[in-house]
Length: 320
Image (cartoon, rainbow, N blue to C red):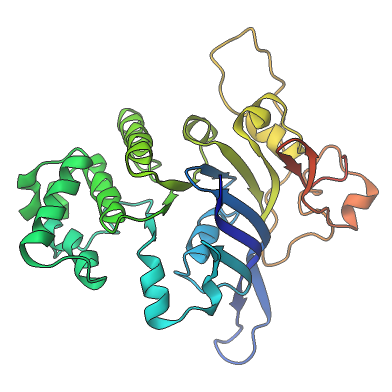
């Protein structure tokens, strides 16, 4: 497989001002030195606790928010060098499905108008051809032609997420960033949306970056999984290796919290100490050392780098 997306040392810092003016006093390091790649047709899952930088990573890759540093290469093109029309043309091939399907839709626009807008913006289609494309994509995501003239408030949560998926698909993209696409839905609807995403991936040869805090959901849909903690990737592995043999103490704690109906698998429950540190004032050395039961002296001083440990398995930990 060829590489579709390559991220090197991605950073996103948000300034903290006191008084509202002048130089920032400090920074919230939402994303700090994140590196990974995604192959064509692959699904990379990003997991971690709330506030670890998952969503910010996805938005920064798409340049919905400008990165503080690092390089994002899409199909061999450095997105940081693109401006204006060039960046807009590239965005046709990179789309996002947002977490809240209702707030991501304009309540004053019909679904037809919402889906036609990107076609007109990118000069893909107009007039009758535009309407036909919209009606076709509605059927692809499990809706009907008569939904064309309806407004967002007339749909259920699951239907609105289907509309969000349709809007992402309408420009025929190559990469879709799915930012917690099922977290706001009922469990029964979640499975429908996940199965739809997998079917669409096969049908349209899509590549996914799937962001979620639900380890069970990520395991169902992903090929590889990256575990984030406080703005950094601490483990990156295939899903089978990650679930069968988690290496990082944080990954082990996350997996121990997943309910398992099979009582024969008596997995030890690992309870983390303390709270997640503030990204505005992260700990020195390994950012996880304040909660790690295997903490050593070096962990408090030196920050571990993400290194290969086994075939396809990377971890940032001084234990290895």
